[in-house]
Length: 221
Image (cartoon, rainbow, N blue to C red; front, side, top):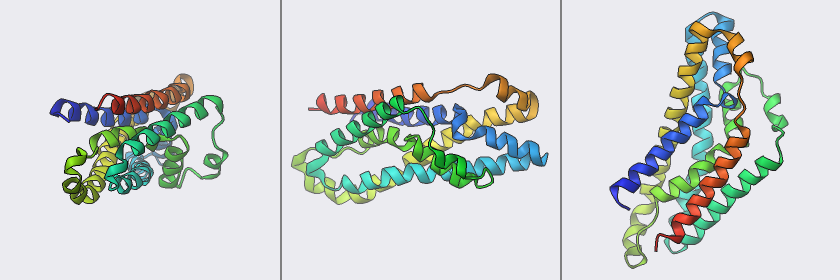
C-alpha cells in the first residue's frame, strides 16, 4: 500500500475511536457521575482510565486472533472476506435487535473496567476495527510469501496492539473532553436533556465498514 492509503487507514482507526468516545453508550456519563458523587475531579479521571482499560481489552481481544490468522498468508483473501462478512452480519443483527444486552445491567457502575469491556464487546465495537486492521496488516504478494510470513507473527500482533491503543486513546480523549465539560460547566441536567442515541448509526457504520473492507479486496488485484 502507498503512504496515503496507510494514513487513511490510521485516520479511520482514530475516527472510529472519536465516534466511540462521543457515544454516551461507551461510558463517559458514568465518569461524570463518578466525579459528581465524590465531588472530586480525580474520580472522573480515574473512571475514564478504567473505561479505557476495558475498551482496550475488548479491542485487542478481537484483533489478536486475526493477527495470528494472518500468519496463514495463503488464506489472506479468504480471511479478509470472512471478516468483512462478519462485520456486516453484526451490523444487520444490531439493526434488527435494538434491545441492549441484559448482562450490561448486571454489572455495577463501580466495576467500570469490566463494564467498558462488556459494552464494547456487546456493541461489536472491536469488529469495526477488523477490516481497517486487515488493511493495515495485509500480506504481501504470494511470490514473496515466505519473506512476509517470517515477519507477520510479530508485525501484525504489534500492529494489533498499536491499532487498539490508538483507537482507545481517541475514544477516551473525545469522551473525556465531553465528560469534563459536563462535570465542570454543564452539570448532570445536560445529560438528561440532550441524551442522543447512536445505535442505528452504529449498526449502519458496521455494515458500511464491512462492505468497504470486502470492496477493497475486490479492487486490490
